[in-house]
Length: 457
Image 1: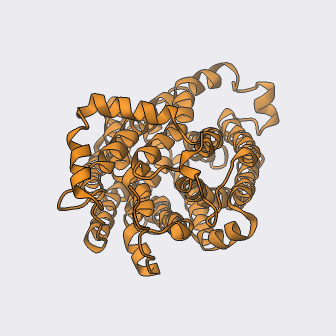
Image 2 (image 1 turned 120 degrees about the horizontal axis):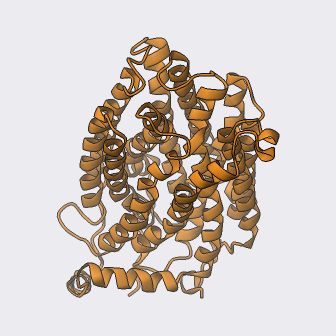
Image 3 (image 1 turned 60 degrees about the horizontal axis):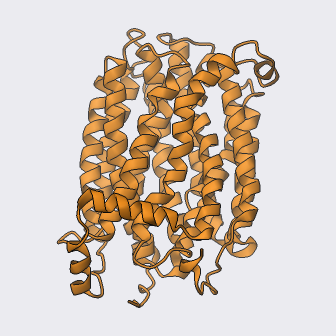
């Protein structure tokens, strides 16, 4: 069934449809910058941290493709994607409110499962939203707008604990090694309000288009046959991935393995090696707050670079642009192992921010031109497999790597800064460099010639 392309949208409309990403990223950034330190406050060792992060990739592996499949087949008073925005935002806000009350590792890890599942419910339909509401020639701009708003949310979320701690002097000394500081607790409470508020703004300001043939849509919906049928359909679509998507998948695998190394260890590495603190000391709390500033720095660069990205992609091509951005991120992460000044550390985050802006937009722009009609949601969810699989591998295996290969005093650790946490971050840079090289194998259908893109084999 052929359908007319959606009409062009103004910049304001594009902002409205993506505004919820400010809150979504607020939630992600809070956990990325603070969960490892929360785990250490509650008594976790460096070897335990990867396994405790397992919630994020496992929930994404299951939730995103299922939500994509279901949202492709949903139409009610709220629309197609917006019911999932609302459900996920409500659950995520409750998890953010509860997280600072954690007093045990089990409680904190359980809340992280709830938080990640909820954010995934909310986030996946936002990717499909761009393909639903924007014509093909505006999609790069639409995904860049998402990257811009993600940058705004991440900057505020990442810097807020530091602002409360260093500027307002709230909770300047942690009461004990198993007590989460006041600055972190207040940041999570603010995150709950921002997430729910921005998602509600998108729901209120952005209308969705009904299916062009409601009769055919209802027949398809009636035949879906529950979760078993959904799982079978998702598996069939996985096997039938377009060639462009398969090659982008390899890029994603190495990209997100590198990012996960950074999220696992950057904050605690800064606290221990630049501020020379241990959990429960003022120096450690100050270091964790500065680690949040590092996340804010790369997010701020992401925000600024998002304005440049559409023009750069038009000039150089999307895959060359993405390769260059990933290489900038690789250099930034690798340099962290050799930096001993907290301000120089912010400079290394420039490369990471350039890579992050591209990671959040360019692969999705390339992918959207290669997908068959009517399956945008499910394929965006399947694409998330290649984000979460490397994270699962890291969560299951990286603790063992820290115990056996990246041991304090090993030759590789001595060569890369002398600390195994810093070495893990540097190896994340190597992974990003591999992803940059793999970009050149990707076939990118141009905006002007997409004939047969959705039927690649």
